[in-house]
Image (cartoon, rainbow, N blue to C red; front, side, top):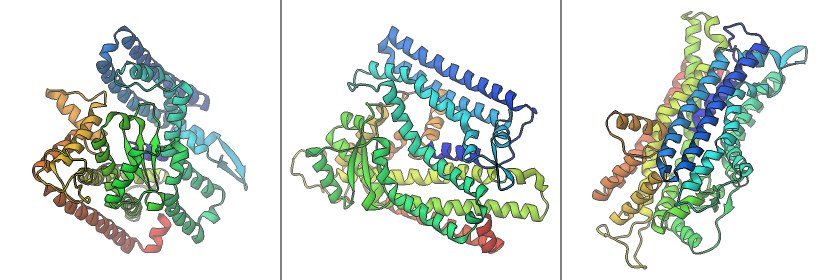
Length: 502
């Protein structure tokens, strides 16, 4: 969910006429917003204390406690969002920031540089404080897990671990957006110059290329140690014909079961393993997971995502600009009703678009990567039942055998089993859980759905090539559709007007 949270935080930072329907003074707004934050933190503290006490009484109930803890944390997450929205739209928090944190510059009263990030501060304060509040509960759950022998973080270490992830995934992109807005306020002539826009476009492209090199120091990653395991991974990447810069280990003190690939270009492309996934999966399952990550690179998913987001941003924002222009030209809506909130509708449309369109695209690509994971551990015998011989002839990343498919299935099942809130349900609870599973896994798809597809693949290996062709058609169709939307909007509005509004 980081992408959607990022869009929401960006939405709170743009310049809009934040309302103050109750007509509260700045001091009243500050007190009431502080009260909402206090109530939310009190609820988080109560949950954390309850988890610790329940595990102290009976550590054997860890699974049930973890499930309750997970549900309550998700509920409080939405409560925190609701309180933040209430502060912005009901208590005048956004208006207080924009009207009081000003500085005189060039004969104008302008918002202080980077002050707009404080509009989202109620949510940021809640999130950061909850890192410390939930620490005792996370530690108690970790210690009650008999199968997890790794030591847990100290409180400072846990805080740094959370802060590093948040800074890289959320704070850094928000900082870039706020930097642009600050420049627009203080040096509008520079921001409006053609060369500045060119630098901005080239800067974004350069960022896609070089940012992966900063992931290692930003998250505290370590180079995977030299040895038999690393050599096996390097050999597998060579057999799959995928170039990598390095293999990295993410120390999470056993809190994450994950692997990922980052980097658009091979010269800055890394595969990252968390410590827990290396501890819990056997060698064949690890190979399947590694093959899944290599599949993203082999099928060009990462550069395609970059292209998709670039085209999507232009298409969505140009469509929103065209609609608003038509409404203005035909007086369908009085200008004063929407002009002061002009930046918000495109952002809301973009969030919905990402959730629906990119979510579907991402799930298609994840399934294609699952197939690649199967191929990575498949041999040349399409009817094999087990890889017994040490010198079995492995495929070149094209063939699929039942044993390879089962390895990928078992890897996904291990990941599902590692989630404390994964439990079989019946009746309405099952239907609700299924809906929530799709909501949570909007980018990857629920693990159980992916596993069902892989069982079908085991019985019908031809599904692998069929899905590859389907994924290619989906990606090509999306690119053609986005380009067509941009061309249509440019033809209707005029290209110069389109560029100006964007």
